[in-house]
Image 1 (cartoon, rainbow, N blue to C red):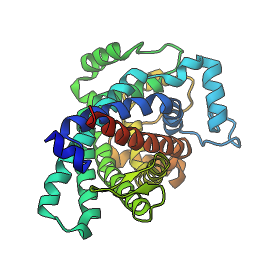
Image 2 (cartoon, rainbow, N blue to C red):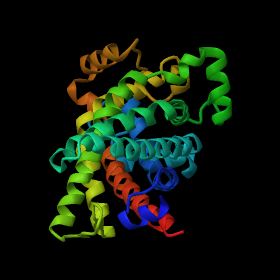
Image 3 (cartoon, helix red, strand yellow):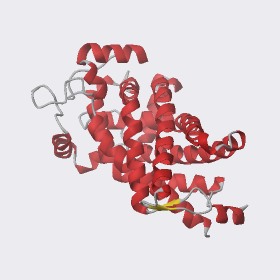
Length: 317
Protein backbone atom coordinates (compact mmCIF):
# COMPACT_ATOMS: atom_id res chain seq x y z
CA UNK A 1 0.00 0.00 0.00
CA UNK A 2 2.80 2.40 0.88
CA UNK A 3 4.64 1.76 -2.42
CA UNK A 4 1.47 2.38 -4.37
CA UNK A 5 0.93 5.63 -2.51
CA UNK A 6 4.45 6.80 -3.29
CA UNK A 7 3.69 6.50 -6.98
CA UNK A 8 0.26 8.14 -6.93
CA UNK A 9 0.92 10.78 -4.31
CA UNK A 10 -2.30 9.81 -2.47
CA UNK A 11 -1.68 9.87 1.30
CA UNK A 12 -2.57 6.87 3.46
CA UNK A 13 -5.04 7.28 6.32
CA UNK A 14 -2.22 7.28 8.88
CA UNK A 15 -0.24 9.90 7.02
CA UNK A 16 -3.38 12.01 6.64
CA UNK A 17 -4.02 11.85 10.37
CA UNK A 18 -0.46 12.81 11.33
CA UNK A 19 -0.22 15.57 8.74
CA UNK A 20 -3.64 16.90 9.70
CA UNK A 21 -2.65 17.12 13.35
CA UNK A 22 0.67 18.81 12.62
CA UNK A 23 -0.86 21.35 10.25
CA UNK A 24 -3.65 22.16 12.69
CA UNK A 25 -1.35 22.70 15.67
CA UNK A 26 1.17 24.77 13.70
CA UNK A 27 -1.35 27.22 12.29
CA UNK A 28 -3.15 27.60 15.63
CA UNK A 29 -0.10 29.09 17.33
CA UNK A 30 0.33 31.82 14.74
CA UNK A 31 -3.39 32.62 14.47
CA UNK A 32 -4.44 32.56 18.13
CA UNK A 33 -4.20 36.38 18.67
CA UNK A 34 -6.64 36.98 15.81
CA UNK A 35 -8.95 34.36 17.30
CA UNK A 36 -8.92 36.10 20.68
CA UNK A 37 -9.75 39.45 19.10
CA UNK A 38 -12.45 37.90 16.92
CA UNK A 39 -14.16 36.29 19.90
CA UNK A 40 -14.01 39.51 21.93
CA UNK A 41 -15.61 41.35 18.99
CA UNK A 42 -18.29 38.69 18.57
CA UNK A 43 -19.31 38.88 22.22
CA UNK A 44 -19.42 42.68 22.39
CA UNK A 45 -22.99 43.98 22.15
CA UNK A 46 -21.91 47.57 21.49
CA UNK A 47 -20.89 48.46 17.89
CA UNK A 48 -17.25 47.92 16.91
CA UNK A 49 -16.71 51.58 16.08
CA UNK A 50 -14.83 54.63 17.34
CA UNK A 51 -18.10 56.59 17.09
CA UNK A 52 -19.55 54.77 20.10
CA UNK A 53 -17.86 55.81 23.33
CA UNK A 54 -19.43 52.91 25.24
CA UNK A 55 -17.69 50.34 23.06
CA UNK A 56 -14.71 48.68 24.73
CA UNK A 57 -13.20 47.52 21.45
CA UNK A 58 -13.32 49.68 18.33
CA UNK A 59 -10.84 48.05 15.95
CA UNK A 60 -8.21 45.33 15.57
CA UNK A 61 -5.20 47.48 16.44
CA UNK A 62 -6.98 49.19 19.34
CA UNK A 63 -8.20 45.84 20.69
CA UNK A 64 -4.76 44.26 20.48
CA UNK A 65 -3.15 47.19 22.31
CA UNK A 66 -5.90 47.36 24.95
CA UNK A 67 -5.83 43.64 25.68
CA UNK A 68 -2.04 43.76 25.99
CA UNK A 69 -2.22 46.81 28.27
CA UNK A 70 -4.95 45.48 30.58
CA UNK A 71 -4.15 41.77 30.61
CA UNK A 72 -0.60 41.42 29.33
CA UNK A 73 0.81 40.07 26.06
CA UNK A 74 -0.02 36.49 27.10
CA UNK A 75 -3.72 37.36 26.98
CA UNK A 76 -3.50 37.26 23.18
CA UNK A 77 -2.95 33.52 23.58
CA UNK A 78 -5.74 32.96 26.11
CA UNK A 79 -7.33 29.57 25.69
CA UNK A 80 -4.35 28.41 23.65
CA UNK A 81 -4.16 24.92 25.16
CA UNK A 82 -7.81 23.96 24.48
CA UNK A 83 -7.46 25.74 21.15
CA UNK A 84 -4.48 23.55 20.29
CA UNK A 85 -6.42 20.46 21.34
CA UNK A 86 -9.28 21.70 19.19
CA UNK A 87 -6.99 22.20 16.18
CA UNK A 88 -5.24 18.85 16.54
CA UNK A 89 -8.42 16.82 17.02
CA UNK A 90 -10.25 18.75 14.31
CA UNK A 91 -7.35 18.48 11.87
CA UNK A 92 -6.82 14.75 12.42
CA UNK A 93 -10.50 13.90 12.06
CA UNK A 94 -11.19 16.29 9.17
CA UNK A 95 -8.34 15.26 6.87
CA UNK A 96 -8.59 11.57 7.73
CA UNK A 97 -12.34 11.54 7.13
CA UNK A 98 -12.01 13.59 3.95
CA UNK A 99 -9.45 11.28 2.35
CA UNK A 100 -11.43 8.18 3.36
CA UNK A 101 -14.74 9.56 2.08
CA UNK A 102 -13.14 10.87 -1.10
CA UNK A 103 -11.71 7.45 -1.92
CA UNK A 104 -15.10 5.82 -1.35
CA UNK A 105 -17.05 8.49 -3.26
CA UNK A 106 -14.74 8.28 -6.27
CA UNK A 107 -15.57 4.59 -6.52
CA UNK A 108 -19.23 5.57 -6.84
CA UNK A 109 -18.62 8.67 -8.98
CA UNK A 110 -15.45 8.00 -11.01
CA UNK A 111 -16.40 10.70 -13.52
CA UNK A 112 -13.94 13.60 -13.23
CA UNK A 113 -16.74 16.02 -14.13
CA UNK A 114 -18.30 15.36 -10.71
CA UNK A 115 -15.09 15.96 -8.79
CA UNK A 116 -16.28 19.33 -7.43
CA UNK A 117 -19.45 17.71 -6.07
CA UNK A 118 -17.46 14.89 -4.51
CA UNK A 119 -15.09 17.37 -2.85
CA UNK A 120 -18.02 19.39 -1.49
CA UNK A 121 -19.87 16.38 -0.05
CA UNK A 122 -16.74 14.86 1.47
CA UNK A 123 -15.66 18.22 2.86
CA UNK A 124 -19.07 18.80 4.44
CA UNK A 125 -19.24 15.37 6.08
CA UNK A 126 -15.65 15.49 7.30
CA UNK A 127 -16.26 18.97 8.72
CA UNK A 128 -19.26 17.74 10.71
CA UNK A 129 -17.32 14.75 12.02
CA UNK A 130 -14.42 16.98 13.08
CA UNK A 131 -16.78 19.44 14.79
CA UNK A 132 -18.46 16.71 16.83
CA UNK A 133 -15.12 15.28 17.93
CA UNK A 134 -13.55 18.59 18.97
CA UNK A 135 -16.49 20.71 20.15
CA UNK A 136 -15.93 20.58 23.96
CA UNK A 137 -12.50 22.15 23.43
CA UNK A 138 -14.15 24.94 21.44
CA UNK A 139 -16.56 25.78 24.28
CA UNK A 140 -13.79 25.82 26.89
CA UNK A 141 -11.56 27.94 24.64
CA UNK A 142 -14.35 30.48 24.15
CA UNK A 143 -14.99 30.82 27.87
CA UNK A 144 -11.32 31.27 28.71
CA UNK A 145 -11.05 34.00 26.06
CA UNK A 146 -14.34 35.62 27.10
CA UNK A 147 -13.32 36.30 30.69
CA UNK A 148 -11.05 39.15 31.70
CA UNK A 149 -8.49 39.33 34.49
CA UNK A 150 -11.03 40.89 36.87
CA UNK A 151 -12.29 38.01 39.02
CA UNK A 152 -11.76 35.28 36.39
CA UNK A 153 -13.91 32.19 36.91
CA UNK A 154 -11.52 29.69 35.31
CA UNK A 155 -7.73 29.70 35.55
CA UNK A 156 -7.08 26.83 33.15
CA UNK A 157 -8.70 24.19 30.96
CA UNK A 158 -8.92 21.54 33.68
CA UNK A 159 -10.73 23.82 36.12
CA UNK A 160 -13.05 25.06 33.37
CA UNK A 161 -13.97 21.48 32.45
CA UNK A 162 -14.56 20.55 36.10
CA UNK A 163 -16.71 23.60 36.93
CA UNK A 164 -18.77 23.41 33.75
CA UNK A 165 -19.51 19.73 34.20
CA UNK A 166 -20.25 20.07 37.92
CA UNK A 167 -22.31 23.28 37.90
CA UNK A 168 -23.92 23.29 34.45
CA UNK A 169 -23.93 19.63 33.54
CA UNK A 170 -22.36 17.79 30.58
CA UNK A 171 -24.70 19.62 28.20
CA UNK A 172 -22.71 22.82 28.81
CA UNK A 173 -19.80 21.33 26.86
CA UNK A 174 -22.01 21.24 23.77
CA UNK A 175 -23.59 24.69 23.94
CA UNK A 176 -23.75 26.20 20.47
CA UNK A 177 -23.43 22.84 18.69
CA UNK A 178 -26.42 23.42 16.40
CA UNK A 179 -25.11 26.60 14.71
CA UNK A 180 -21.66 25.04 14.64
CA UNK A 181 -22.89 22.03 12.66
CA UNK A 182 -24.98 24.25 10.39
CA UNK A 183 -21.85 26.32 9.79
CA UNK A 184 -19.27 23.55 9.53
CA UNK A 185 -20.93 21.51 6.77
CA UNK A 186 -21.15 24.24 4.10
CA UNK A 187 -17.95 25.93 5.27
CA UNK A 188 -15.86 22.77 5.15
CA UNK A 189 -17.55 21.73 1.94
CA UNK A 190 -16.92 25.02 0.16
CA UNK A 191 -13.42 25.22 1.64
CA UNK A 192 -12.34 21.88 0.20
CA UNK A 193 -14.25 22.43 -3.04
CA UNK A 194 -12.72 25.87 -3.60
CA UNK A 195 -9.25 24.63 -2.67
CA UNK A 196 -9.43 21.70 -5.06
CA UNK A 197 -10.81 24.02 -7.75
CA UNK A 198 -7.99 26.54 -7.43
CA UNK A 199 -5.41 23.76 -7.11
CA UNK A 200 -6.65 22.16 -10.32
CA UNK A 201 -6.65 25.53 -12.06
CA UNK A 202 -3.09 26.33 -11.03
CA UNK A 203 -1.82 22.86 -12.00
CA UNK A 204 -3.70 22.77 -15.31
CA UNK A 205 -2.33 26.13 -16.39
CA UNK A 206 1.14 25.31 -15.04
CA UNK A 207 0.80 28.49 -12.94
CA UNK A 208 2.12 27.87 -9.41
CA UNK A 209 1.86 24.11 -9.97
CA UNK A 210 2.89 21.11 -12.02
CA UNK A 211 1.17 17.93 -13.18
CA UNK A 212 2.14 14.40 -12.18
CA UNK A 213 0.55 10.94 -12.19
CA UNK A 214 -1.91 11.94 -9.46
CA UNK A 215 -3.88 15.16 -9.00
CA UNK A 216 -0.80 17.29 -9.41
CA UNK A 217 1.45 19.22 -7.06
CA UNK A 218 1.36 22.89 -6.17
CA UNK A 219 4.41 24.99 -5.54
CA UNK A 220 4.39 26.44 -2.02
CA UNK A 221 3.17 29.79 -3.37
CA UNK A 222 0.30 28.09 -5.20
CA UNK A 223 -0.74 26.14 -2.13
CA UNK A 224 -0.70 29.32 -0.03
CA UNK A 225 -2.80 31.25 -2.54
CA UNK A 226 -5.29 28.44 -3.13
CA UNK A 227 -5.75 27.96 0.61
CA UNK A 228 -6.23 31.69 1.17
CA UNK A 229 -8.89 31.99 -1.53
CA UNK A 230 -10.67 28.90 -0.23
CA UNK A 231 -10.70 30.25 3.32
CA UNK A 232 -12.07 33.64 2.33
CA UNK A 233 -14.83 32.16 0.21
CA UNK A 234 -16.06 29.70 2.83
CA UNK A 235 -15.82 32.08 5.79
CA UNK A 236 -18.02 34.81 4.31
CA UNK A 237 -20.81 32.35 3.51
CA UNK A 238 -21.18 30.94 7.02
CA UNK A 239 -20.00 33.67 9.40
CA UNK A 240 -23.32 34.52 11.18
CA UNK A 241 -23.48 30.97 12.53
CA UNK A 242 -19.98 31.34 13.97
CA UNK A 243 -21.06 34.46 15.86
CA UNK A 244 -24.21 32.71 17.12
CA UNK A 245 -22.14 29.77 18.32
CA UNK A 246 -19.84 31.97 20.40
CA UNK A 247 -22.72 33.88 21.97
CA UNK A 248 -24.53 30.68 22.86
CA UNK A 249 -21.38 29.23 24.41
CA UNK A 250 -21.21 31.97 27.07
CA UNK A 251 -24.82 31.67 28.22
CA UNK A 252 -24.74 31.18 31.98
CA UNK A 253 -21.23 32.67 32.05
CA UNK A 254 -22.19 36.37 31.93
CA UNK A 255 -20.81 36.98 35.44
CA UNK A 256 -17.29 36.60 34.08
CA UNK A 257 -17.92 39.36 31.53
CA UNK A 258 -17.73 42.24 34.02
CA UNK A 259 -16.07 45.25 32.41
CA UNK A 260 -16.87 44.18 28.83
CA UNK A 261 -20.09 46.16 28.40
CA UNK A 262 -23.66 44.90 28.08
CA UNK A 263 -24.41 41.23 28.63
CA UNK A 264 -26.06 39.18 25.89
CA UNK A 265 -28.84 36.71 26.65
CA UNK A 266 -30.51 34.14 24.39
CA UNK A 267 -32.20 30.75 24.68
CA UNK A 268 -31.24 29.09 21.40
CA UNK A 269 -30.06 29.59 17.84
CA UNK A 270 -33.15 31.42 16.55
CA UNK A 271 -33.32 33.51 19.72
CA UNK A 272 -29.65 34.42 19.33
CA UNK A 273 -29.99 35.49 15.70
CA UNK A 274 -33.23 37.42 16.28
CA UNK A 275 -31.92 39.17 19.40
CA UNK A 276 -28.68 40.11 17.64
CA UNK A 277 -30.43 41.56 14.59
CA UNK A 278 -33.08 43.28 16.72
CA UNK A 279 -30.57 45.02 18.96
CA UNK A 280 -27.58 45.48 16.67
CA UNK A 281 -28.93 45.24 13.13
CA UNK A 282 -27.90 42.85 10.35
CA UNK A 283 -24.34 44.11 10.65
CA UNK A 284 -24.29 42.70 14.17
CA UNK A 285 -24.20 39.20 12.68
CA UNK A 286 -20.83 40.03 11.13
CA UNK A 287 -19.02 41.45 14.14
CA UNK A 288 -15.43 40.28 14.16
CA UNK A 289 -15.51 39.41 10.46
CA UNK A 290 -12.35 41.40 9.65
CA UNK A 291 -10.02 39.64 12.13
CA UNK A 292 -11.79 36.41 11.19
CA UNK A 293 -10.93 36.90 7.52
CA UNK A 294 -7.33 37.78 8.37
CA UNK A 295 -7.16 34.63 10.45
CA UNK A 296 -8.85 32.61 7.69
CA UNK A 297 -6.31 33.75 5.10
CA UNK A 298 -3.35 32.85 7.31
CA UNK A 299 -4.90 29.65 8.65
CA UNK A 300 -6.05 28.16 5.36
CA UNK A 301 -2.94 29.12 3.43
CA UNK A 302 -0.73 27.56 6.08
CA UNK A 303 -2.84 24.53 6.97
CA UNK A 304 -3.11 23.21 3.41
CA UNK A 305 0.54 23.97 2.64
CA UNK A 306 1.83 22.34 5.81
CA UNK A 307 -0.55 19.39 5.37
CA UNK A 308 0.51 18.60 1.80
CA UNK A 309 4.22 19.13 2.41
CA UNK A 310 4.07 17.02 5.58
CA UNK A 311 2.34 14.25 3.63
CA UNK A 312 5.07 14.36 0.99
CA UNK A 313 7.81 14.11 3.64
CA UNK A 314 6.09 11.29 5.54
CA UNK A 315 5.52 9.31 2.34
CA UNK A 316 9.28 9.23 1.78
CA UNK A 317 10.04 7.80 5.22
